[in-house]
Amino acid sequence: MVSDDEYTWAEPMTADFVDEMMIAGLGSENLEAYQDFVDVHTSKKVPLDIESMWAVMGLAAEAGEVLAEFEKGIRKDDFETRREAILEELGDVLWYAAALCNAYDTTLEEVMVNNCRKLEQRVSN
Ligand SMILES: [Mg+2]
Image 1 (spheres, helix red, strand yellow):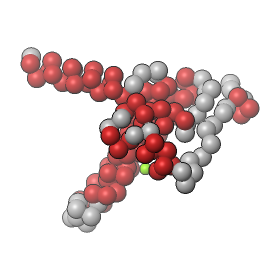
Image 2 (cartoon, rainbow, N blue to C red):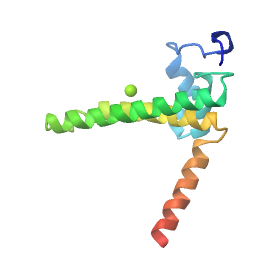
Image 3 (cartoon, rainbow, N blue to C red):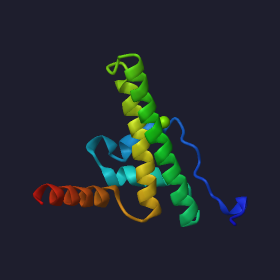
């Protein structure tokens, strides 16, 4: 069991968040910079099982939030006005996907490339 003293949670994001994102070059599809940014703003020195569990729970929760926005779109027969909310939740999904990559010491890029290879094989077979 890990004591509370062993957890070193990153400082909460500040108003400098957007500036940091721009410095990291996130406007230019820089996945590595994004992943580093996620790393800075998430847990530190947390055992892998806890860090990965936290990331998986966040990923599932945020995927559920995407689903909830779609449900609202169906219920209100209005997907156009839900677009912004859906994309916002998708960003949260990306955040936790990056955090999970960090927990497993891999990169979003590696996951993306491997996924493309898997899909390519599926199509060619
Ligand atoms: Mg969310």
